[in-house]
Image (cartoon, rainbow, N blue to C red; front, side):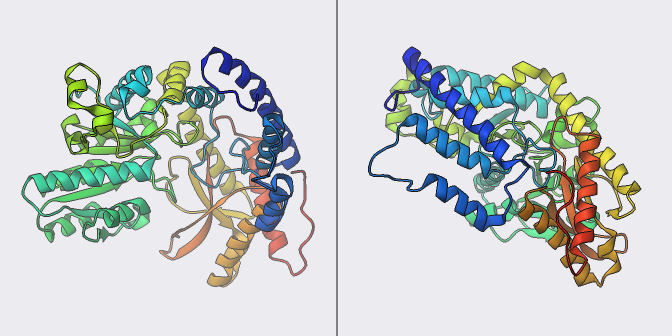
Length: 487
């Protein structure tokens, strides 16, 4: 069993026996953890993990079943569990079981998506799935195409790379990126990695990119420019005014890229898709499915309006895509990514799309959006909590204890930060943090709930708010009490 391989008919039998060990270990670890996060903080988690798993490289192996039982149980006990409705800090979704099961098949088959002879069927599946997702972003656009990426960071990097290459092909030295203060950090990092000029960062009042500020910035910019808008900001889930930004970019001869890593799956819902009106004016669109798509990491997509834009990714490596192999009809996969070896992440996406369909995925997206509005209403009705004024992000709500408002500004922000850390240390809830403008224009620290659980509602949401309020009351006293209520 220790030396069995996962593929083939015999491998499937061996994998089945070991999978049962893994599933038991996952359940045992989750039971031992008892909540959305292990308690005790970083030191305690490290001590428990090392006590269970040391030495990580023993002189003599312990065997496959013991190793899986020990390591998987220890990691599960020490995991942040996005399947718990009170694990709501980040764009960190609970993967659907169908997606996780398909991911097991991907790992067992282990196609490498850099040459046809390593992934004959998976290459076809990726071609068909990316075509369907490109049509979702650019409906009816025959030339549209999409790439599978590791997520928003890689998608944004490739989008800027392609924009740079288009600028060079037109005779310019480079491209100038114009983005908002609300843009994801990966945009600036991509500019740095690609040796582009420092992005022009313009105002984003209230968390949204200001078209007038972009207009003024483009008027001062010479040469090719790429405006980067966001459809679903990380801190607040807000969507930039895409139609206006598209018009401004077009007026100045600039291109538009939309980072819709968070908001892209709104397109699955007929009711919510209009929130992304103006998206089709973009030259390229980042779109993640390991956020509002319930896929195990990684599951990113970069869609482009015209597949010809992907030509700069072409690369010749004789052992992977020799000219004569191409002439003989073997597909060339190497130009479908900036990576070489890459796993078949498309398999889990394909299984999910087939299992749920557009309607099923749209219903899950709608649930999360509706849950955010329900959560906001509960905050508004809570006597000890206050919501950040303004629109609700896609499925993100910012709020803070009223006790923080009663303190001096610095002390109030410190209280908010301490409440979050106490919840983490006690393992009782995972809420995020974000700095954003209040109604008076003052930037304050807020707690952040990012609601990605496809079933959380009602008592789950109210219970989390009561827990936050009780923790704030304990934190603001001189002598904190013991945690209240069950984990």
